[in-house]
Image (tube, rainbow, N blue to C red):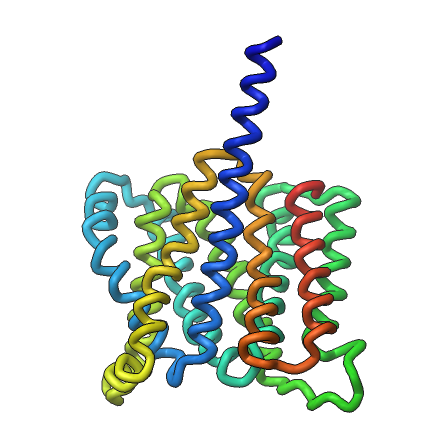
Amino acid sequence: MVVFVQQEREGAHMLSISILLVLSSGLAHAVWNLFTKKSENKMAFLWLITLPTTVILLPVLIWELMHVQLTWSLVLFLFMSFFFQGCYTLLISKAYTYGDISQVYPIMRGTGTLLIPFFSAIFFHEYLSVPGWLGVICIVIGVFAISGMIGTDRQAQPVNPLALRYAFAVGLCITGYTLTDKQIVQQLSPFALLEITNFACLIVAGGFVWKKGLIRREWQKNWRTIVLGAVLSPGSYLLFLFAMTLAPLAAIAPIREVSTVFGTLLGVFLLKERQRVWRLSMSLMITIGIISIAVWG
């Protein structure tokens, strides 16, 4: 009995640490997205914050590719992940160019999480329960409401439709690389997979900014946030990896989606974006829906 109680306490302690790590991961993710929104050139900023990690992880990717069996299916999934990540890089810069972070950030996160259960049922035979579908309804309501399509103040400035389109497109990319990466991590480590993501970002972003002198200009103007972003962008994922070693994935994965709330908080309080109470309420509804799917779905 004493041993059982001690094991329960140790398990609760590990879970508490993992939750702290995941909350930190969500905050880091929201902060580097805030830096991206505030940058002068979104593509140049993304290129610069990705470069250091790409250099560091290159030996890891080379070593793993030398020791793994490169089947046609694995190569296909790698190309698919590269494609989705490249599109993600292009579209997220567009979304932040035309829309507020408190508006597009929840849509990007919510759309991906909304679509993944449907495709998971088709490809992986994973089905939602009644609470899970209630979570989907919360996400749908929150996404449409925070986008300005329903329920907003009529006197508020109209929502830029381009921002909505790009945000939903980013959500589609998140859905694509999440489903694809689930297959890849069965053969490659998350670090090698992260390096594939880095290459996609560098190639796509570099094609738009390399010959225009935008990288030097962005560095000169925002080198401080670039240095922080270079740590926070990969760090947000690494914190989540450490959390997975301490607690079950099903228990901690939904908690990372509080980055939606963090992103909205940063947008409305630091960037002084409009409709504060409404956007905070709806981003919270999206998060509740995501948690409902992950925990009870």
